[in-house]
Structures are given as structure tokens and as C-alpha cells.
Image (cartoon, rainbow, N blue to C red):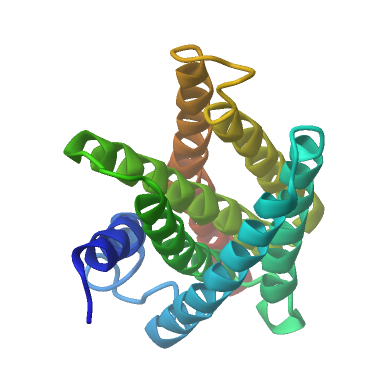
Amino acid sequence: MVDYVQLASAAAGFAPAMALMYYTLRDYTFPKVEKPFFDDRKLFAFFALGVVLGMLLFAFERWGGAIAGAETLLALIMGFALMEELMKLIVLNFPRFQRKVDTAFYGLSLGLGIASTFTFATVYVFILDVPNIQPTDTVAIFFLGLLFVLLHGSTTAIIGVGVARGETKGYFLEALVVHVVFGILYESFFVVELIPSPLNLLGLAGAAAVVTYSYQKVHRQYLPNLVKDAKRLAQKKKG
């Protein structure tokens, strides 16, 4: 039977992911444009794939976190980031998706799918692990979950834009740097024995700033410029 913890965790993972998908993609599909820049069926297929991958990534990271020590934390952060971004690149860089504008939008959908279940599982386990959780704790947990949605949404979209432009290496490296920097700042919030409260809040604020900036860059710069360039190229071919 579904309980409050499961409902709250699902809301923390899926609600912001779906809201961001609508917020970002609404300008590229009907009724804003006569001809959408992506296929809705493929979009949700990538989201569904991301849902599965998100659970697998959570299980793998959970296992890694259980065996990690302070001396291996940095290596694990970098290793997990590299593994996850490579996985996204492998999925999006199939020949049939290369140099196609819609790949960027499918990348965003894939990332938000990953984020939805990764966040759901993370929040669910976190709530169960905290005894006598308070309402203020719930708000904080939801905020932490939102950071993962912004992280995976932005980094996967960045890789998708790179595949669409045929400039995979540079965009992949950008996504990797965002992921690594976020991971280091995010984990610093929890290492209170090294960074005591309230100084550890600076790490969390930095992590939030990194992923918020990264997502806004995708929303306001990368996707609009990609579409603009694609339109310009299409007009040249017609001319």
C-alpha cells in the first residue's frame, strides 16, 4: 500500500521533472510553433528510459557510498560523474541521433527521466533514515531533490546539444565539469566533521548555484541558439 513517504518521494522526484520539461519545451511544440521540433512519442520514450536508468544509477551510487570512506570520497564523486555522463553520451550518440536538432530535446527528456527516479529513491531512503522527521526537514529534503533534477536535466541536455551540433567532445566535457563540481560542493554539505555547520551551507549554496546556472544556460542559450542555427541552415538549403 502506498504510504505518505512514498507519495512525498514521488512528488519530490516527478513533479519538478515534469514541471521543468513543460517550462523548457513549451516554446518548441504546438501551439507555440506550427511544426514541433521533436516527436512526442520519442520524447516520452526517452523519459521512460531515463526512469529505468535513474533507478540503476541510484542503486549503484548507494552501493558505492556504503563502501566509501573520507579518503575515497573525491575519487568516487569523479568516478560516478564520469560513468553517468558517459552513459548519457552512449545513449544519445547513436548514429541515427547525430546532427539532428531533436536529439537535444530528447537529451533533456532522458535527463529529467533519470532525475525523477534518482530523486524519488534518494528522498525516500533519506526520509526513512531520519528518525522523527520534522516539516522543516521535509522542505530541505525536497530542495535537495530539486538539485538532482536540475543536475541531470541540464547535463544530459548539454550532451544532447553537443550530439546535435556534431561537437560532442566539448559539450561532454562541460557536462562532466558541471557534474563533478556539483558533486564536490554537494557532498561538502554532509561532511560536517570536516566542514562544520553553518559553513557547510556554503557548499550546498554553491551546488545549487552551479546547477541552476547550468539549467538556465540550456533553457535560455543552448536550445534557442540550436534552433536558430537549424532554421538558418534550412533557409540556406532552400535558397
